[in-house]
Length: 424
Image (cartoon, rainbow, N blue to C red; front, top):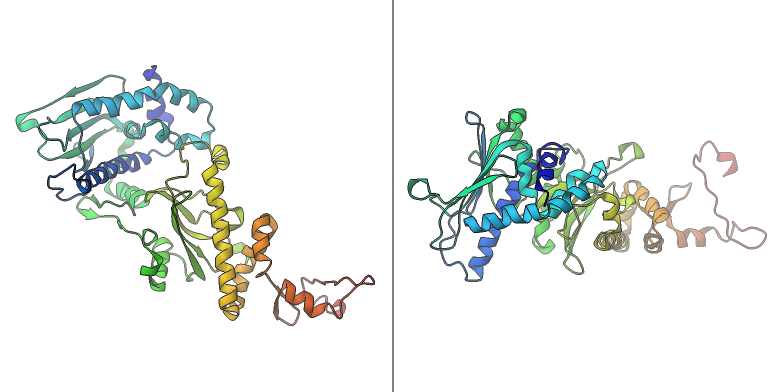
């Protein structure tokens, strides 16, 4: 295994955005915490769980960032296995894959090879792990690595042992990464990636996340105000409330939860993409959701959370993934179902919203055959006298007076009724 190849890549080139190291380390801490909770539920861990928080601290004077959890913890043997062997065994394959991957995807590929922890070396000259396993009669494990392929591991005892169960990852921040010693910078990163993680995340004594965001709850337990409040939380700069929303919740044949909002859009100049945030198990991944969400729905706002979307491969491969195609189709169907339901239950209210949603519907009909089949029953046409008709209604309305010599109904269009008044 040519592990010497991997560290320069990780340290210098792996992520275009070095800030992702914090997402990886906090996610690992959350995983360790949830696994301990799972063992407790199964009766395999009978001790006191205690306060299950993940804590992030920074000390500018000693140039240290510490990520601490009270989760499973690890023995020295487990650290050798999980931190060294898994990462190193994936190293050769990783290096080969990295060479053939396009630039955009390079910052997404690392997790596939069990290398998330090693992102710490992008900002560190040395990384330490102090860990105490939940298992009885085990010693503290202390692992140190300077980013080369050499590491040390020992089992300190007495006053040097770790007093509590769990793991502390200590980063000795490199000289070229001073920005990550600033509290404000770390708080921004944590808020971006960890705002909705399912375990409490504390930074410098302050809780920074909501562990049960509304997309994890059942629609029956939520009010309209809950949905509107969440929208304002996601988009504090938005002046308008959403027109309506769709709560996604499916667990077969793939897992997907989320909330999609239809914003008020009066004209194409107001279109703004990248308003849908993609999460995986409540960890923020990206707001680039092309392929996951149909093109014509990229203008929606909201959150999608799915552990079944492959995050670590190039975007072109993502498009070909079976789950991604199924999710794309499912979202299209749910949007069509919601629009059809609004049309049937409240025609007047639907017509009031048409100025905002008409462009979505027409674009969708032009770009997606399956959506067209559903939408042809609720797409509306506006006559010169301002009335709105479905396709069937309008055909019936004009067929007596607007037929060609062969008896075919003719529909006439104008894009400016006043300028073309003489022809209308």
